[in-house]
Length: 410
Ligand code: MLT
Image (cartoon, rainbow, N blue to C red):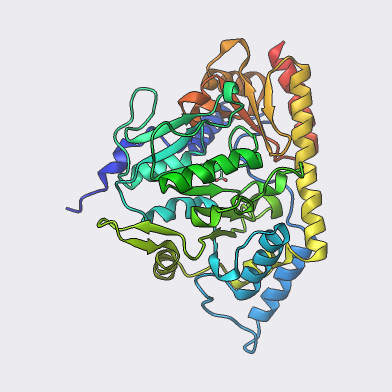
């Protein structure tokens, strides 16, 4: 009989979004006429920009001819895309990141989990609370944590509370950690990190030999010119940080799948014997062994995100979702709700009214207003009493959601 990975048994309940889906399905089965508006999972609603579609059509035509057909691509991604990323996402912002340090993949979620393949199982790990659940759950699966306590917090993780008191930007850990996850613009709170704040983390990481795993999947939502888009905008970050980026939320690739991870040359970790080893060759080895790359068609589509027309269309798309965020923020504030985020991010983080728990508020909103959001407690114990709304939806749905929200509070 094959042994299972017992660590999976430590995981609390289901993954957050499937659990929401289960509750919503039960509600719609019992109320088939209810028109449910989903502001839960951050999934885009608008079609892919025309420049991307055009590039993908062209790539499909290439695949139809022997002379231009492509089989396996490079596991690290095609040079044309890695070069475009290096030029537009990094050189343009004065970040020292070269094309060979960029690994194209099928998603940041996957990479955030997969990166643990190249890291040891005895690292001390700091994770914000609330947080994107993938960072915690993948560490549980990998056996890097103890059991969960009653509040859902796992042993061996140093939780860094992100609360209204610290403006949802956690304080540095009190003790030294080997690994820290940071996500800015933040999922779920929608807050951003200033240059000053990120510099503190880079300094901490340098002083403590800590590896930063920086998730910048929402960087394109930064409207404020003073907010850094990449950890590599901070001096010295190359020596301490890996960065995850995605085409999901800017170019609308949640279903198309394309992302990338930057592992700088020279960034190191230590062996069990304390010997320094570079992480880049390890990640390269991991990807070459377990991954066959993103399809040529999709990578051509991602490349078009950087063309003049594509970049403009993406800016418009992001602006559209940011306007949705602003409508939600203003509408809910007017209804007397305490709201955070939603200015440089597609997520609104609100305080549940009347002291309701996050899940009670979820049920109330679903049954009274047929609205779906994400309970803050699903992102961690410190998210209790909060609720996340996603701005990814059609304008009509967002406007209707604001109306329904107000009615549900009456
Ligand atoms: C979210 O809603 O938190 C995100 O859509 C999840 C993800 O990007 O995987």
